[in-house]
Length: 300
Length: 300
Image 1 (cartoon, chains in turn brown, yellow):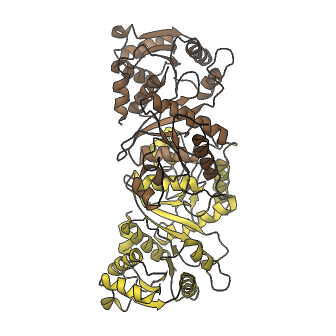
Image 2 (cartoon, one colour):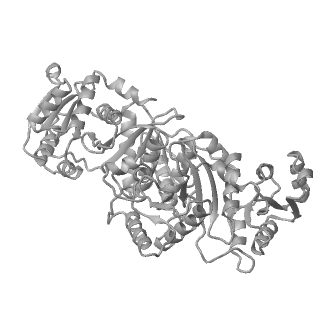
Image 3 (cartoon, chains in turn red, brown):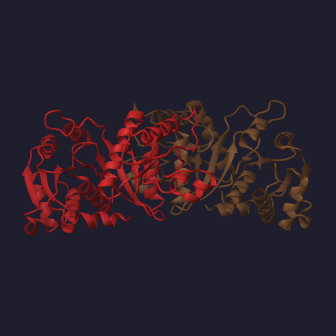
């Protein structure tokens, strides 16, 4: 599956509304303009009204799109973050998107007990990769939020990713808890968690997916490599979701795919009441668009 | 630098002798025959003499190469491993290579106090990658031996890799201790070790290299990514050696490069009295040849 298809499938979903916290930024408005042009969503832009208008004007995006763009003036970053979170909390928007505001500020608003987006679940990052030579979308989690998740957190990280995969049409995603080896090694904690998660899945404790691990990366994505090792598995060679054991593993894999394998990627934070788009300046315009499309498709 | 150059530079080094433990295997002899054809080294083959001769015959490799191939019959794997290790211990061979024998058996012989190859140093795996779009050889360590090295072990792992890089002509290798982020984060042990290693290098405790970390993978290999983050570093964007914090990070990076980025790789075990070639069946013939070339070039 191609990421472009996420965009195609999201077209006409303009009933889905994205609330952007601190939208007064050139790159943020560029992403919004691109998403509006593709018809991915409607937007409520919180931030400096004058600057937002001027940037939208630059993109010729204001006059003809009055129906899908609303601007709400806020005085500072905290107000922008809180206001954007609040409209999502109230169900008036379906996706939260970070603009020109620190991640810590927006996450603080997300975690606010009164008007935030908590569900009690772990928040986790889910990245959807389109990698040359691999026919499925490859979801990698968690490469950005949870540093060294324990078994309970891994359960929720998987559940978050499974929900997103199902939203975009992967009915029963195949989940590979990735380690350095495919055998259970008492000296390697990641392999013990992988075995436990596999068994929890068999006992119905983690649903709507097939988990089988530990698998090394090659076993997870190459049937030939798995057969070479004599691995019998419903997941090997055809993983939809790679659960990585730590943020270092995820981050290195993420960047290796982007920098060395020219992979395409979109990513969101899952586990809150609504998907959260946290693109960073280093992301390409294309990647930002994929992230918005993934969020819109994942939103209720 | 290209890995092919390792082979070119190793040509004519037939004075370097590789001792192969349990050479009676089709794929092992295929690798030996290829190395002999390229003129990379001389070989002492330990194992079942009859089978070795028949396999060499199959490759038309025996008659015309009597000067560079010696066969010594052994009765079982343990004898083959011990005998091969012993000739290296005695200085009669310069590289140890694993044949059709379990890694545990050969490592046990390597660690033998009487005739083994201990130096007191940590043994570590060093892989040399040729990656499209990155002009340097990229050494990754340790993706295969040390599960979760502590700071002292990381020092030695770096030292092992630096020695190899220098042997192939990288006079002062640039070392990036890789983490998920480029800042020191008290909650991420890998970043603390990276900072300590950087400072140890400044104080002369790790020599013959420039260490600067923590760096995320993109900062280590892309100057643009590093500048985007405002990172001032002599290593960023031009790392020769990536020190990974755990075997999971290394293994996933290794396999991502091989499977998704079509990178070429050769690898050896360093830290013993002589380089050790531990190729596995899953390695391509090309990769085995690169590993032998890297070992020959690294040998004293």
